Image (tube, rainbow, N blue to C red; front, side, top):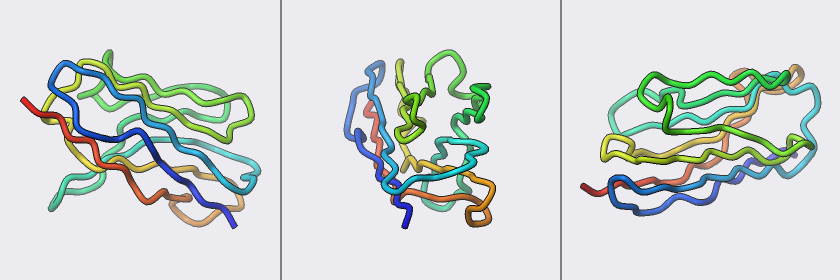
Amino acid sequence: QVQLVESGGGLVQAGGSLRLSCAASGRIFNIITMGWYRQVPGKQRDMVAVITNGGTTNYGDSVKGRFTISRDNAKTTLYLQMNSLKPEDTAVYYCNVVAIAGPRGGYWGQGTQVTVSS
């Protein structure tokens, strides 16, 4: 059974950095995309960054130039380097993996809280 476990969240001051990790337990075959999403209470879950199987990256407008998505060669760990953090980046961050034979919407982690203080 596939599980995604995020780590690296926490409290940081504005302008600081955090690095999130998402480790997959259980092999996921035929990955289409791996990505990070975030959600604040009462709002929809938004895309932060996505990387395709071929390595193409896509970022949400609000994080371009500040966040960097990457993964290990085995595609078992996903990372999100977050620099120049702003209070509006405060959210629960979720890892997502979409695979051909996986569930609709992909696999999701349990989320990790990121809080940026002003």
